[in-house]
Amino acid sequence: MPTQAPPRHGQGSSAPGCPHTPPRSPGSANRRRIERRRSQSQYPHLYFGGHETTANTLIWSLFLLSLSEEWRARLELEARAVLEGPVEDHAARLVETKAVIEEAMRLYPPVASMSRQAIGPDDLAGKRIRKNSLVIVSQWVLHRHRLLWDKPDCFDPRRFLPGSREKIDRFAYLPFGAGPRVCIGASFSLQEASDYPRPYRAVVFL
Ligand code: HEM
Image 1 (cartoon, rainbow, N blue to C red):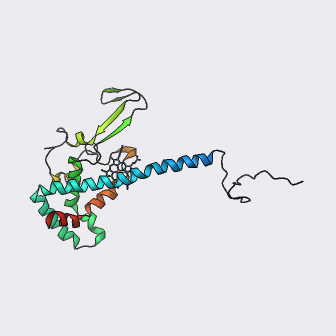
Image 2 (cartoon, helix red, strand yellow):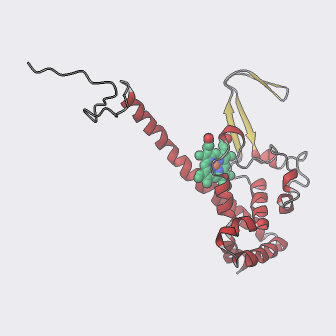
Image 3 (cartoon, helix red, strand yellow):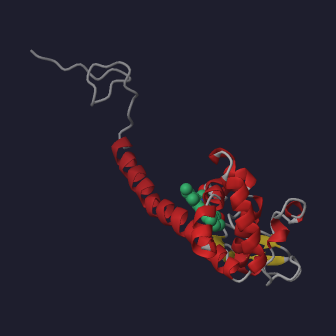
């Protein structure tokens, strides 16, 4: 009489007889489906969060440059000097360009606010927070706060030049957020935006 041996430990249904197939728990197919759906739901965030933000940063930088003859001239000089050198050094050497981009993100933060829902009661700067309350941190408000910035509504990229940049409080300037959910694309997008002296020259200087 034919008999069917019970599956051995570590034997998965997709690889019969293979002793190296990791064991699967009964609900694992379902879990994989859920994981796939969850990761698919992140694609639009990665796509839009990673493109629109950088595009907005560039547009506001160009707008602010269009209002400042001084900074247009400074960036033109920097672009001429840096573009002569090796491509891999561009981002590090475009110091003034990066300062303009950071100042544009201060005045026009691509992410204007972030929110969290309180998982329990808490105290925040002397205010009582109830469970499930929505707590909003607004970069727009923070970046133009008169107690945190000198002439906050004024376009002045000098704030972000070496020597001044280090004096900015870590939590006064949050274009990329902070803490465990800080933007994973921060360095990439800064580098991407800074390495655009060519479009700057094309749009602003020509
Ligand atoms: C100028 C460009 C960008 C700005 C201003 C920006 C801003 C932000 C901010 C403020 C957050 C935190 C949101 C929160 O705490 O609620 C965030 C998160 C995130 N960003 Fe960006 N972002 C930019 C570019 C990018 C790029 C290029 C990518 C991907 C390549 C990216 C991927 C993400 C992801 C995946 C998160 C969620 C991180 C997590 O929740 O653990 N971002 N971004």
